[in-house]
Length: 150
Ligand code: RTP
Image 1: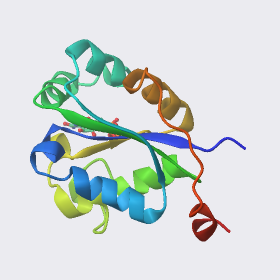
Image 2 (image 1 turned 90 degrees about the vertical axis):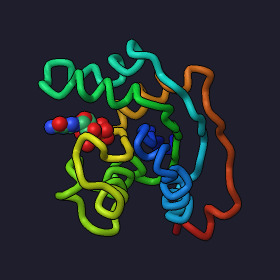
Image 3 (image 1 turned 135 degrees about the vertical axis):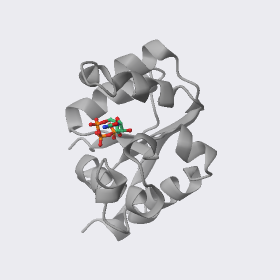
């Protein structure tokens, strides 16, 4: 059975605020497996492709400018239902609607500075992984999985 993967990205505000370790730590401690990790300063064209579905939204130019304001840290995590669970761990898009205990609910206030991104479906996760990690990511087995999965 193929393991589900998701693309999680700490946005420029999260990087500058020193929250990269916090985001990694939460996914690690939950039991998900890290397959890829890198800091990048993406181009405008790259971001416009990543957020292609949002091109017609009024906030699109502001979103791209915000994402261009500094480096981002992209990561690929794997595990059971990691796409859906990853979104739950991030919290609602608008931080003020995010539950305490989620990343956005604990660390953010405004929607335009919401710290992190998480793929919203298995299909978009695979597209985003191909876009952000064209060189590919790791694949390995872990002995600790027997302590995490029944
Ligand atoms: P993401 O892709 O970053 O995980 O966010 P999402 O699916 O929860 O939300 P989406 O609707 O795809 O929006 C992408 C990002 O655009 C910014 N945004 N600004 N009204 C606004 O000003 C507004 N709405 C959304 C946020 O940074 C959001 O994460």
